[in-house]
Image 1: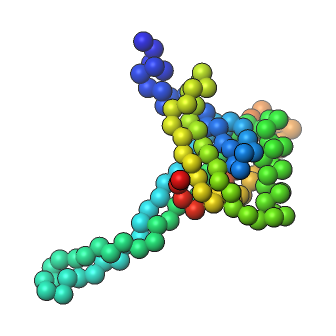
Image 2: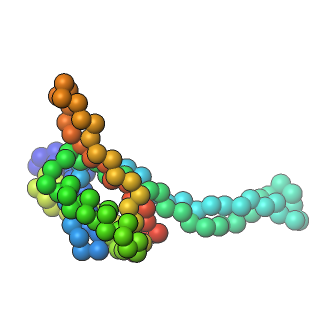
Amino acid sequence: MSLADLHPGISVFFSVTVDTVPLGTWNKLSGLGMSIQHADRTDTAMSMFYNHLPGAMTYSPITLERLIGPETAQTLNWFSAYHMLPIPVTGQIVCLTQDMEPVMSWELLGVSPREWRGPTLDAGSAAALTETLTINHMGFL
């Protein structure tokens, strides 16, 4: 049994699809999270106790990063199309092993693009050309 069999989360890729449009595989993902805002209120009978009243649930923006490649055009097309007709859509992020076997998936509601950044181009540099996509979402399905 190999290390990859014991720990499938090592050396993974992330396949991203929005509204049935595949945005390809990504090497890095950050910001997948949610939180509940709380309002603390003292108990009226005993002032040493606090009630933590739940408020709104918020979802963190998700940032994806990968090397520039043929899938970049599809990402830019989706980003531009959203600008023309801004309707949030559903999306899916699937964590894949090196053998492209799914490890975990997240279904997203209300996905919309937030930011796309391309590479820094420098003819004198040997650095890899990467792109970064940041998306917002309204929650998990």
